[in-house]
Length: 433
Picture (cartoon, rainbow, N blue to C red):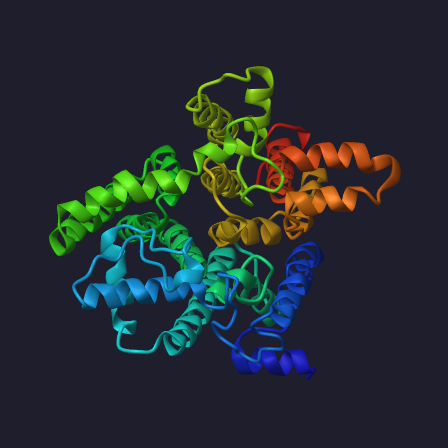
């Protein structure tokens, strides 16, 4: 018996179930830059764990430190919005609805560096749980996976370029990825209340994940929709009960408007501006290029129009599991790009991305999707694209022009959506699976 045979006999799962070269290539592509970031980050250096030593305001564990300070202020009976950990981190303050701070209260008795290490461990446990959920989802579609596939999916959630900064800063994005994966898995099992609750919890923290409700409505998941809304409303009411009406009013009147960063988009979001992955970036250049005096509300309105048209392509006809997966994928992409959001929210997309990588195995559309998946792991900031374009000779002008108006990750999303659209509306999809 081969080593693979012994492994399968002992665990019930072989090392390699099938050869998924395309999926392996895309998942492997996420790891080198992620591992490099872990290796070279100024406060980690070869994982020496020098937590919180930088004076730049963006030190290791800074996001968790914000959560920790907010929790300590709650325990002390003090206001927790608008308070940074120290004077060097004035831009880092608590940004989530009031009730969410209760999730960090158990850490209040620890010093913040110990709390950060515990929170990092919990995030890695979340990555492992999300891996199990994604693997079960893929295998429920009739696609067997081996231990190699599990390792690559876990690497995506724990080590990839899409999560390295989340772990480094101590953010909650890996856990939000788990919530989305659990929500979609619960939908597949027709556990609608559990699905809606998972999506509702994710939306309570970052707000924009509530856009996944568009899929719940399209799929006529009324119980899930009600559960998601109920979770959100219950969370807001709990915040009022625990912290008073004034705290919740302050959150919606002061904290939420400041998160939109609307002024940065007027006239076109510059290449050295915030690293947002959003359709509003190219639209801002188009809108104010055509109409220099355009009022700002036209920008989110135009983004809603573009995103709505995109979803219409995928929502019009859903007959197969692949159609459904592509519609889910499109929904999460729209959730990520309709509003100004950061590339670090990519874990929300991991379940439909991985499912498509493993279950879509043929056609030109598939090859285009793989190309988009590879591009997805190129996370250069627009200003870095402009710098790199100077060394591209005759390609400098078009690359620089593109770099001024669009991020590479947004382009990757566009390529993958185009691949899915091509498959749905071309001869490839005559024999629907």
